[in-house]
Length: 196
Image 1: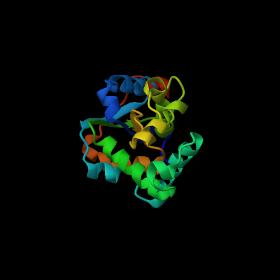
Image 2 (image 1 turned 180 degrees about the vertical axis):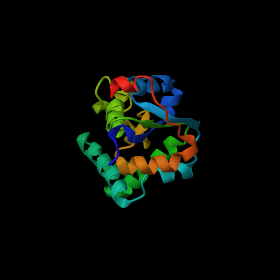
Image 3 (image 1 turned 90 degrees about the vertical axis):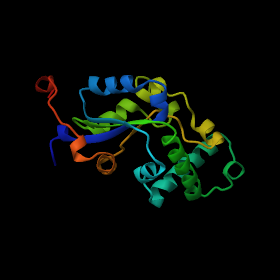
Image 4 (image 1 turned 120 degrees about the vertical axis):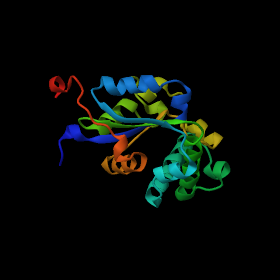
């Protein structure tokens, strides 16, 4: 196991975060936490790139469908009436398609973040992917106004500003997928000797 301060993760500011002018705010929160941004780039992703960014395995897709079904159940919505099915895998495929459309609707800002427990720290900074569940003080809790029920009714992805790698395996895939080694620039922050 490498030193915890060597951990890297990927954060992507989604099109709604870019369009709402939150790039600087998001970067500021990452840096103020003591994490380093070691790669940064704005792109307009293609459907193929986003299709390869998100997992294609049936387990992950089925979980998307299960989350949507739970939301429908919680709010008394009929999945068959709304989506024509109650099969989690089929619903997950629809949701994955909505994600691809959303993530290609405008430019993204992708970055690599490094620091002690970077994956966990970034997930805490961004907050729950469901805006209503995100704590105040997190990026989504302070700036997300979208709702899963509204998104489901509109047949679109939730506009929740950012994507953050969920675990080490996802972080490694996203790091290798989105960045070439020469695009990553490590350096020593001035306060590193004091902080850790």
